[in-house]
Image (tube, rainbow, N blue to C red):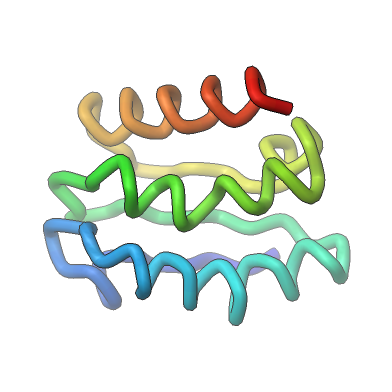
Length: 96
């Protein structure tokens, strides 16, 4: 299992989709390919953009379908962040 503390990379406002893409490619996808669980820890992150979450997880859902959501855990999310994650995951599952 790996834990990714997003605040260390993003600060309290996670908006940089290029950073999200980098985290996905360099940390999340390699862990999933080794069948490891990934915890995305949103401690101290107050807001995220939909484009950040999309860049962070949409490709995971495309590659691993709903199994990605079983291997990736979202922790310490406030209600706003939870809603954005739900929007992106619901959308990605609909277009699948």
